[in-house]
Length: 197
Image (cartoon, one colour):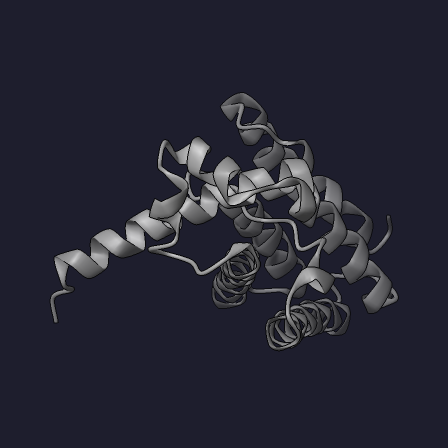
């Protein structure tokens, strides 16, 4: 079934807005960012943003949902394509980083979940917990198949996820740097997992 052109245009413009908002929130935080900052980055009026969101809280929430969706998709592709647990970890790291530094980035750093209203906060926290549990399951799979050395999967997951999730704070769009991150981070973040290291 063909998509309605107006619906497609709305989705494209909203995604553009969420990328701009993610950039602003990552640089200046929730309290330091106004809807005007996001509108200015897009070359729109403040009023134009209200076509897409009701307020700043909803904008942060939508940015966090977008980031969670990107992480989930990156992980699912890794699970579908990787053979061993280690391969799935490496693919996940690369896929997730690509969603941050590639053409669909940036993604918002989920550092201000407490600023969300309770229903949004609960939803985002649940998505985050589910994502962490799925990653820990990949690590356990790797330990079971011998491709990953025995480790504390909770702490290992936190270390790897924390490294990935902080990239938007210091990456500012240089494509040569993006390529280096894509080439190096999967190796750097997974080499300590290999048996014998």
